[in-house]
Amino acid sequence: MSIYTNKKTTIIINITKTKNNMKKLIITIAFAAISMMSFAQLTKIPVTKDSTIMMDKLYVGMLSGSEFSTDSLYASTFANIRFGVMGTYQPAKWIAVKAWAMYQGETQKAPWQMQQFWLKLTPNKKLSIEAGNMATLPTEQRPHPVSGDGQFETFSEAQIVGMALNAKIKYTFTSDIQAGAGIAVRKDKPEYSGMVNYKKVTLSAWYAEYNQKVGTALTLHFTRVYSTLVWKQDQIVSEILVIHLNKDKSISLYADTGYDLGKKDIVRGEWGLLKTFKSEYINGLYGLGYNHETNTVNGYLFLHL
Image (cartoon, rainbow, N blue to C red; front, top):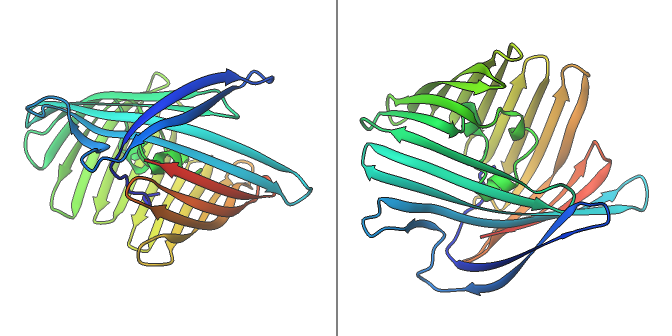
């Protein structure tokens, strides 16, 4: 969900790792120092004097939550920390080498990471050609992993296919219309995809040969309403719907719902309220919602730079 804005700061992070009795890795991060200098920034940091190598973004965030059971006097907690970096090497206007890396540690799961590396060619302003280990066209409708939206990715958004070794081409017909096509390798089989974007509406579809199934994703991103609807043949239909109640989008209602087409049952249902906040240095949110699967009332605190 696009509800966050990164601000400027410089951070120094100290990371320690320990294991609990259940052999789960707990990662605790202490912010050793935060230098509040007005010229410091987390985006568009030149690495070379000629700016051919640019650090596009540095990110760090911590998401924590508590789950209060409605069936008994019981509560559980979780927390995760994510940090990542994005970079671009652009020796000429028409060619760029792009990469990003992300690492996440969690209290209830093993730590994990993601990386992407690809080549982008732009022969002219309307045409782009990309190839490498990267997001497919439908994957672009998921929030970027190196962002607050990515760390707070919803169940419904996560139903869209993920990154893969692929090639894709996009053509911008007008300022309002863009279309694309791509081919990826998933589980050693081809996966074909296409995308059409008209203003604030994006529709994509894919066909995977490894399971011979089709999937589609529709995203609407208006001033007060955000929605991503995902349908996967014989598998699931799911939607995340966010309604912003005020102009600055700081108070929102959300509904994240998924229906299993095979089991014919609701496998995801969480509905609640989000209160976002932002300052010169730290952004985040408070959240409160009801989770259908676990019969719990969930509270969230999310902070990111």
